[in-house]
Length: 174
Image (tube, rainbow, N blue to C red; front, side):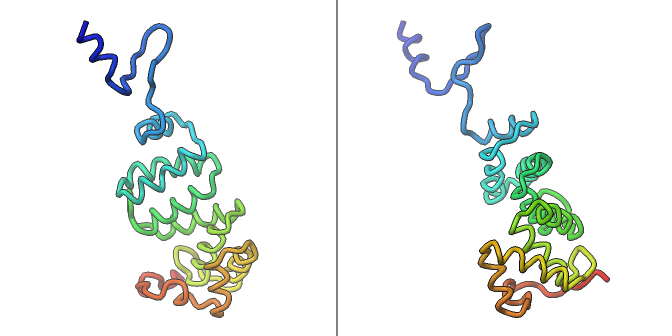
């Protein structure tokens, strides 16, 4: 009898039987990754990619953001750009980073507009087009994005928003 009581007191044991699963995992990274692996996205699953990235779980973050981006979550697209731009969970790929930011910008995401606009200004991962870059930064600034407004006020000088950037890294591709 005391073994039965001890087992009943153990928290969180998932038990499956013919009626379903009792005490399934909820609100855990394992559950998020299970959902993502099965193609189930949600705002909370997609947002969990941020915690994965910041905790160094870049492979899991990449899987999460890629799945979410495929379902149209524009914030996940900008995070994919971040991962590709830094070689986290995959190869360093400025072209892919710019492509993700372009997709986010086209979806109306102000961070995507800013990021892709900055890439166009620099010619980083995409052919340089300063006029198109300024136009996207202006669109992002019009939404109230502070960093875009700051870049506008600085005359579109990229050093204003990335003063410690390795400028060699951002040399134009053309």
